[in-house]
Image 1: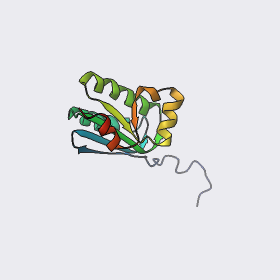
Image 2: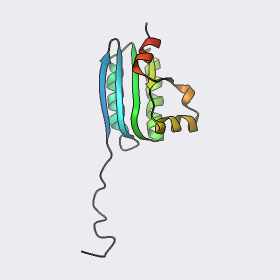
Image 3: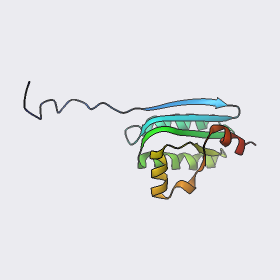
Image 4: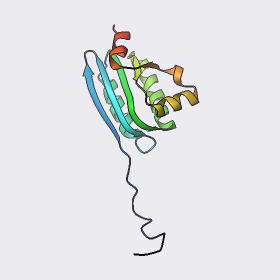
Length: 129
């Protein structure tokens, strides 16, 4: 066993993943994000959210309950999604944001920029055409 602390320093760090799942619930599309949303996973989140928006749902609900790390990149992604959804006439709702997400929304003053619901059912009920 070596006592050189720099030995093995070139080993890659395990990456934290962002997992996505998209489901249709009646006329709404729910995109569930879980894991860490930061610069290294933004593209994964962007791809999933834009694909969900391309379905032109009556409501796009983004479930953030299982997001553990949420940085400015995550916030920028949601703000961009909000603007695109608005331009396409698709209502957007955030569902059950985790403590990490709520913290960033609160600290940045972005909470009021989104419609937030505790459940998908409540979000769907509020956005029934």
